[in-house]
Length: 395
Image 1 (cartoon, one colour):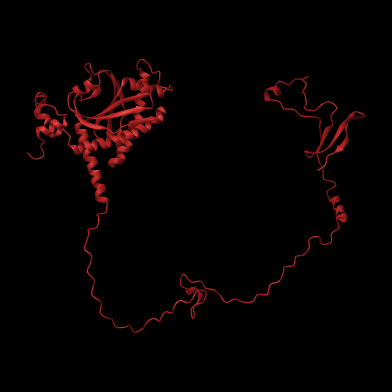
Image 2 (cartoon, rainbow, N blue to C red; image 1 turned 120 degrees about the vertical axis):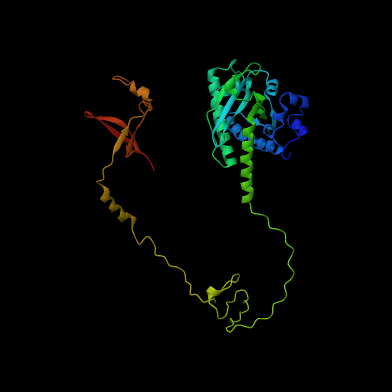
């Protein structure tokens, strides 16, 4: 029948499973196209998962501040029994449900020890001493990490498929595959075959492990259909390559045409370099030729500048200082200085002695508008302090 896979092809896709095993699990359903993926569909799912998980790895790097490496995935059809044989110890199931653009959910499986390291890094640890058991805080932390990772992954998927894709907040559950599991936590994965996408994951020097992403086969086919339609639109948008055509044969020489009534004036031969074109203005000069006007005699002479002194006598100019004789200036006598902290200043009280940076008997400073102009010594004039200038500061 057209479109149907042979039993050998089905066995190859299911990992060369024997015909007897296939018959025991229901050969009529496993031989249907709805229970398998073609090589083209597997390649497309692998490409989608590779791009999405690469974006998620970048987000995880920002959360744990460690280099995160996720290898190229491998895609296969698997069953719950195969999954149990690969994950013999408790692991963490993160369920991601699509609410916009795609219908269905997928499951991300992480090893319990890997989750302990990731959550320890998220909580400020170095990942070398993770917790012995996963608590509610750890499960909330891994849910937040997966929420950001799968959110960025959904953004990449939206760009890839050309439509809005959104997810619900992920839920995390610790599942022991060796025991009976709650179907409400893992969906129908334990009763039907599913698509398994396998990755190798490294986080710095702390984690060298594997993660798995499970898709229902119907969801995988829906992703493939959207991916193929998007790629088809891209191909249609590309311009078709021009078909190769043989070189045209040389056309016969055209017959001479009658001359028009008003023939254009004959063009003049281009002048030699440096020569103007005869009978044509400068604006009409052709490109590549410089128009040089004829040289004219110029009468040049040296510039004469007027002297700046204008016969001014500096002695007579000193009389102008009388104009500013009544300008007030602030004269300050500085006995000394010191630096104190705010705490020390707040501790000041009557009787507090403040030590200055001036030695006893050393001349004190005389400042005019904040500029040091002289030094002197303190004197007492009747009942007031005064200053006797002992030295004038030079410029």
